[in-house]
Length: 261
Image (cartoon, rainbow, N blue to C red):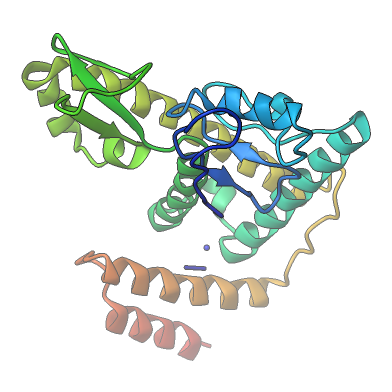
């Protein structure tokens, strides 16, 4: 709407190791690992480094998320500037498609933004597999017994619960409720921070800031863009089942607007 490469390594250093997922993020300079589910990744990475395999830098691996390989202060500055430019470009696109966003984010626009932020969050925090031990859900630290009950939890599964269904889990499955609450809270904080970043970037574009000021349209041009955006939003709302999104009515209203002299 407008407004991994993955491969398995059966063994590398000594003995078989669990498959390791390599993810090349387009804007990152190096190899990124998912270590929350595969703690032995660190040992594999150290082994690769010892054998002078340049595909892995131990400094790029840490628990709880992903980290790009930064080779120097110069490279750090380059990567930061690149990320900043990407944010600026995204802010410009959003503002051009939704000029009133600083007055409030329309529901359909926020839905699309949230889906985009969740895609990135899901890349950084992939699904984790828990096992039940004495009624609790824990992340396995070694070989998982074949008969163990496994429960996969990701940001997508955590956020798929309605507020009511999530609340009921507190009574029906307290252990799962606790895990999901942690996931939901972390996602909520991430989403809020990304929204703040985007709106700040848009304000800087509008006010001039350190970036190029966005040209202000003539009022007549603004009206045309506003009405075109209204039609697009109406179509998207209707596609979601919004009964109030009457495209035929809106088109008649717009026609009446333009016919008024």
